[in-house]
Amino acid sequence: MAATGKSEMSIRTVAIVGCGIGRSHIVEGYLPHADKFKVVAICDLNGERLAAVGDEFGIERRTTSFAELLADDTIDIIDICTPPGVHLEQVVAALAAGKHVVCEKPLTGSLAAVDTIMAAEKTAKGVLMPIFQYRYGDGIQKAKRIIDAGIAGKAYTASVETFWLRKPEYYAVPWRGKWATELGGVLVTHALHLHDMMMHLMGPAARVFGRVATRVNDIEVEDCASASLLMESGAFVSLSCTLGSQEQLSRLRLHFENVTFESSHEPYTPGKDPWKIIAANDDVRGQIDRVIADWQPVAPRFTTQMGQFHAFLSGQGPLPVTTVDARRALELVTAIYQSSDSGAEVPLPVGPDSPKYADWRARTK
Image (cartoon, rainbow, N blue to C red; front, side, top):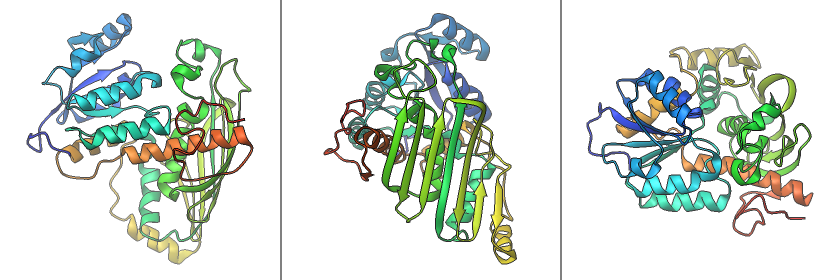
């Protein structure tokens, strides 16, 4: 359900829970849409950060109590930006309180937990929008339009590279690098974005073979991974990610029958232009030019995702990212972990019969 009885142009009130990445939600997601959203409260257990963010944006209401926000009928949206280990309980509680919910990735830490959230959604008054902000920007959205128009043709192969750098000081934050609180490493916290982008353009995977290792930092979770995917379309995809790259980049290169796409290499805004769009011939180039002739700029990251969220709440468009999208991304994570442990290829879908369904941290060897 999208409506709360408000008019289409209503300003939705927002409470941010977690002022780390939550600050980026304010700067990129809500301030550019001041006619649509108003951040009325912030919540964080770190008093200094709570004060700093509140002072920076003039947000008077500051609390350390999540329950206090849930009980406040004047708040429309709970935006959850807390460490991954508490997402499940906070999302379920916010839905039970009748709120709309925005939740940072990873949505949660197992497919069983995602299915618990999906069951809670069915009876909730509000809706849940997971965050996948890398889907937005002119580059990826042009590619999406070209593919959806049927111009690209058959998908052949793709490579996806998440080559980032995380040093020991990054893991000085107590919840990072630990299975109990971060829930995973490069696959869950970093490469999840690029892998979602790939599936957004190429569709779901059918079979997965993967390997993970901890090679860069002295942490519990993986910081290097690779995987070979057979997509439902028949295309082959290779995934490679590390947190030990001395030059940070994010890169997708997708090969179709009629077009090759290559993303921007910007590590944290790969959806933005410039993307390479290489047509097979002049006829295909003409088709591409015609399908994007009326192009209107697409702001990257949270700006467009939050704008589309408000449009959905106002009955003017689809929910931009759904729990089904989040589940698909976490199903790929689960399959890679299972394959790495077992040394075997894993068919999708991954269901309750999988040794990783209830908890992908469980060892299967």
